[in-house]
Length: 424
Image (cartoon, rainbow, N blue to C red; front, side, top):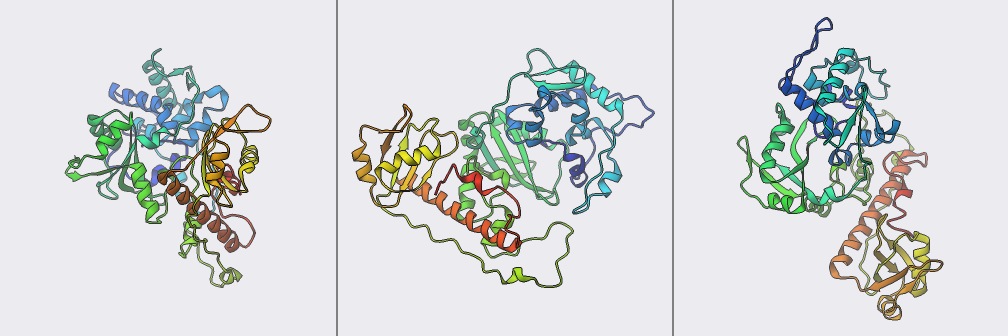
């Protein structure tokens, strides 16, 4: 699939494919694959190092920060897509030993002929014009990678394909299909996180926002007889938020915090699912007597919100101190790296603050001067939506800790990670 990583050595066993691209090669045979397979392999290797893939591929992002950015061919050969293309056989012992709470053994070495063929193919296929460079054993990007959030606004969510149906060369064919309507930077096939079955939904990232919006407005998209329903990912995300549904990781908006699935279940009074293969306890414990908290209703209060701009490079504590000159600050809402945000005062002093600091609000011990302005209806609505989501996430974390019975969260993002976006 589009985003690959080393975990696929195991995960590949649970992703059915209609037919292999190349048949496995016996250990005694010479490895010889045709030029079309070599072209696909080289293109796939280049793809792993693109900005579009690295924005979503945590394994590759970590890999390029080590060893001066070089990723060995012996590592790449384990990626599921390359294994399928080259015909590297799966090790049945690794597949059969996948059990809950069991540590997987170290993957066995892959026959050197496969690694050598991959190295030769990539070295022959990469040119000076490409964004990667090659040595005898590894590949790396020429330019440093800078993570970006722009992909979210250029991505279309597409429904309409059959659940569980697998396609030969699915990514290539679907990418070619959507490329008729614009540059496809990345295509991801959404899968069931447990079974790995294809959910029939796609995430298609285009080269520009305009291309994505044009596709999202189409009503006549059809692929192999299936009518497709495209919608901008941002709109799809907001629909699910409005319906109070769980937001899967691949749908999350950059910069926002979300509850884990376990936390979401607790907050919505649902039974937290057991880990795969785990058996329920026969005897009730004191956890069943824990009194769960419920989120407080977030009410919009007039004349307490002020938008500020010009906060470049200012720490959250310094922001609060500066804004506190206009009134008692309840919390500050600003994303990491942003230069503007919203302050929520405890008292209705917004209009007075804007008037008093019409010429700007200086920040102590810096040359920064904040500009204050009124919050429009759209920003105010978005602010309270974020406040509601943050409140629900905080309650869900506390409930999960209580059910855990050990004062620790059951998983997911730490509470400290949201301090920049909302400071109490």
